[in-house]
Amino acid sequence: MSNYIKIPLANNPARSLVNATGSLTSSITTNSTDATTLASPTAKAFTTSGNGISGVVALTVAAGAVTVASTTSGGEGYKVGDTLTFDKSVIGGTTDVVITLAAGDLVASSGSSTEPFFFMPIDNVGAVVKGSATTCIVELKQANATGTGADKVAKYTITMDDVPATTALALQADVAAAVIKAASAENAQPEVKFTSGAECLAVVLS
Amino acid sequence: MIKLPIYNSGPTALQPRYTCVNVEDVYQVDKAATSGSVYDVIHIHYSTPSFDAGDFLRASIDYTTGTATVVTDQDIENLKDLIASANQNPSSTPEFELIGARSASASDIINYQVVDIQIKAENPAAV
Image 1 (cartoon, rainbow over the protein chains, first blue to last red):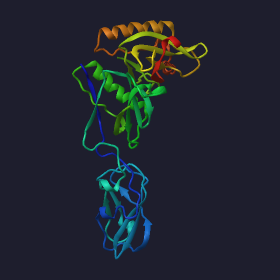
Image 2 (cartoon, rainbow over the protein chains, first blue to last red):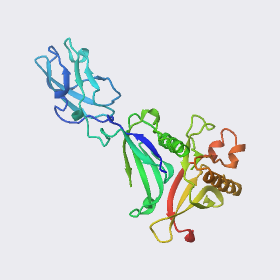
Image 3 (cartoon, rainbow over the protein chains, first blue to last red):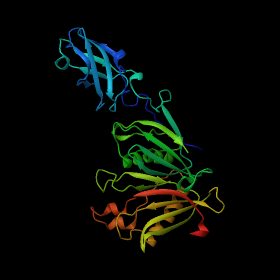
């Protein structure tokens, strides 16, 4: 009898902003009518509703309205639906300018948006080993015909997003906890609970 | 399957989190030294063949944190007994703990927790 663990896949993974001229213009959901004129693109501070950090956005303002919004530094940790708010105290006038991020505003992700879980069979799991802060390795008790050196053993590589951050040891323990539970209860298909809210982008067998 | 405490993984050394190792098809368990006669690694040999002629799979459980021996002959015997017991009770996932951990101080107990695990293919006759 085969048992499985369920690894939740991120359907809205945190990512960097697309770094391009005018990349955010079409995502302005609230514009101003009396902001201070900016004839050339100028980086302006903003706040976000999510956990994104370090993004830099330059605005061009004409006739009181933002006409071009460009990402000049992608930062990281932004999600679809997050808002970027430029306070009126920063851009002048009487109205905050709000950008609501759409999928096209963020770099491509290897995370799945259609499959909620990856089902990993545990019958031939050899060991859950330490990877890195963004990967966990599940080595199988199964040879790999095409591998060389350490890759002569088949393995799953679980790739995590780097925001929110976790650690190699935490990932190892999180995955191992589910494998131990599945091994102890044949009818259970436990879900891996990633601490720190870390999100899984992909699981690859090699 | 058996579970093993992970080095430096819990909120305190006395509350480690665990990883796990498959112990089906194990035909031999022995200890190994990473340096001289400092025994700090356990090898679990599987009867699972690799694709290279003569090679079989082996798990290395590494406890290397310092320069002292932490794996003893009695640990190997205890692990063999635990593996036999785990295979008699397929739904069990018993914990394996080195003997030294039982008498270690709270600050030293992490030296008896697993630092790394690797599964490799090797030729038993060549080792």
